[in-house]
Length: 486
Ligand code: PHE
Image 1 (cartoon, rainbow, N blue to C red):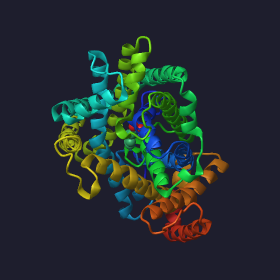
Image 2: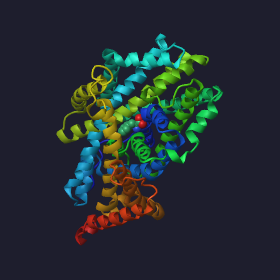
Image 3: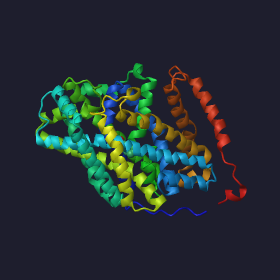
């Protein structure tokens, strides 16, 4: 069987790195990371998050890129092709389907949050953010959300922009946008960190982020850290897989993965260093939830010279970072419609856009008209976030590594990753044992099946590794000698 020829490829050698960084760096880094770090108590959470990036995020990302490039297509098609090349069980295709659905569901609430960033760019300029206390800014934020026309208008705008760019074909658009946007964002963050440094509470912010308090390591926090590692690196949601399918042969997957992961982590930490000192200096609680940056940063901007301009520029950068992530979330679905049903990218984007508008409407209404509707204790916005980050992404990730580590013939991944022997052995060890075991333990804990802190019980780890090794042998395909030499 010959390998699938790529239909699209990145224009430049940096194309994938830029686009994947554009996908990874987004609201997850600047909006979500600070507020969940605040909710889970700071340093201990940061440490768990970093550990998850290193031990799970990086191996899963390498796997996903390799699967995408091997299968050359939308997540569903790429995985199906790789499984077919391997004569594997067609059930594995579910991995691709789940990834695509997960990405689309994320998109549905992501556009609402991205709408906040767009709206705040505007509000910085029109003088609505001049209130000089955190409480008053909190009221501005609450009023913005209480008005469905306002909130909905901005999220519809983001949805339309996203689909418009995706319809046009992303390569050129994204590649040229991220080329100036990423350095710009880094610069803005450095300016903000510089400001935070002078705010008088830099030490408190720094300590909050980097002082480690072991009592704050809980199963719940670990699950949040794991989910966030997936979210922030855009894993198990089709985005990295479909972008990976446009990488030219011969480009190093490991190198690109490390660059993307390092950029992503640096942006998150910088955002934390910019935001927490301002929060402490102004007596805001770090656990104020999703509105955190919208209530704290405008205050910082007011106090600095040229604050309005900086503030508008900052929220504009956040908006663009969110847009490049939203584009990657939509790309998988549009690529699938295009490939599977042969409809043009434009029609695919319109079709996906209609569904997006309907579902994102539900997420948007959770803040106002439907705020009282909280089935099983969460509103619809929170459900979308919870289901994708806590369940679909980690589950998708576990199946992705099981597929690559156990079910596929060794040569497929070895070819694609083309690592030196030691590097390959390390990757294989991570995807066979470390990733599935860690993800599974965190799950088991979440389900309350273990009923105690999984980290302390090393014998459970040994037991799960043993089980997985057996499962692995069962899953290993019987290689027909005639096929083995292909
Ligand atoms: N990684 C993006 C962020 O941090 C969100 C995202 C998740 C994008 C999944 C694509 C896929 O904001």
